[in-house]
Image 1 (cartoon, rainbow, N blue to C red):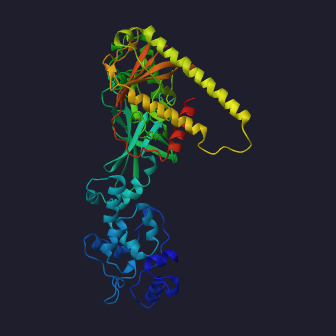
Image 2: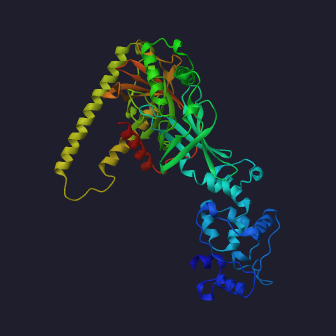
Length: 537
C-alpha cells in the first residue's frame, strides 16, 4: 500500500487510485493497473500481447499512447505518475538504475508496458556499462536493448573487473570488461624480457555475447582455431570458473612441439635456440608443461587495486618488474602506514604469485654514498647492514616497552588512539620530514658485481629506503627475508637491490586504466591481500 500511495499520489486515508481503476475496469473502463509480481530484470517490461507491442512502438517513435489517466481534470496538475504522458515516463524510468526497474514493473501493467520501450534500456546500457555502440543495429538480429542489459550485462556483472587465475605458482592478471556488445576476458601479459618499460601485452581467453536465439553464449578464445564452445560458472561474488568444451581446438597439427614453439614466441618473443642459459631453458619448459595442462579450465579470484592516500610516497598500483631467469612479473605496490609492500600477482616456482616479494621500511631512509663509493658493493652492504641492526634494536626495544606496559597496565581500558596512534603519527611525521629534506634527485649507479637484467636503468634517483626481499628455493622451500635497498627513481619507476643475491630488479608502472577494480574499503583490500597470500602458501 505504501508503494502504491507513493506512485499514485494518494494516501490510504483517501483511498487507493489502483483500486478505483480496477473498479472502473470492471465497469468496462480502460483502466489497466493490474499488479505484476515479476522481479527479474530480464522480465521487466515483458508480456502484454499485441496491444502492448503497438503501444511500445508508439512511445518509442515519440507518439504517446493514449490513456484515460494521462491528464487530470482541466486546470489541475497531475496527482500521480499514471497521469503523466508516457514519453515523460520513459525519461523518468530511463534515469533509474536498471536493477530498480523490475520492481517498477510490478506496480501495474501500464508501467510494465512502458518498460518495454527500448529507449529506457539503451540508456541503462550506456550509463551503467559504457556501451556506446549504436544499439539500434540490434533490431536486425531481433535482440533488444533490454535483452542486452538483462541477459548479458546484468547477468554477468559480477565477473567484471580484475582477477587472478589459480595456475599454481604462476598466477596471472585477467581483466574482464564490456567491449562493445561483448563481455571479454583479457589476460594481461608483461612485455618480453627484459624490456620493462614496454607496454603490456594482452590476449582474449573468453567472450560472452548474445546470439539470435536471445541467450548469452560463452566462447573460449584459447588456441589458434578461433572461438569455440565454452562455459562460465559464477561460484560466488568474488570467484568464478571457466571451462572449455572443445579442447581439441587448442591442439596444433604439429603436436606438442609446435605448440611449445608457438607458446615460446608469444611468451618470450624468441626461440629456444636463442636462450643459451640452461637453467632458464628448464624454467621455461617447466612453465609450458604446467600451464598448458589447464586448457583454459581455470578458477579466478577477484583482486582489487590498492587504495591511495595523499601521504603515499608515490601512487600505488600495478608494476612490471624483472626477476632474473624467471623473466618479467607483475607486482602490486601498496602502502600501509610506515610500510610499503610489493605483492606478486604473477609468480614463479621459487616465490609464487600471492607472496609479498618486497617490504619497504619508510621510517628508515638510506643516505647513499657518492657515485664513486657507491660502485663499491662492500660500502653499500655496510650501510644497509647498519640500518638492519638499528631496525632490529628498535623492534626489541618496542617489544620490551610493550611487555612493561602490559605488566603495569591498570584494569581500566585505554582509550582508542592512545600511545600507539601517537607513535605512528610521530613516525609518519619524521618520515615526511626526511622526505622533505631529501634532494630532488641524486646520482645513482649499481655497485660492481650486482647483476641487472636491464642495463638501461635510470642514473638518478629521488630517495632510497631500507627494505627486505623474500627469497626461497625451488618449490618455495626455506623462504627467508633478506636485507635490500628500495630505490625510488620517479613516479612510475622504482628498483630493489637484493643484497644477498647481488641482483637488481627494475619495476615500471602498468599504465592501464582498469575499470571495476577499486576496493570497496581499505578493509576489503587488506582481506584480499591476506587471502591471496594464504592461497599461495
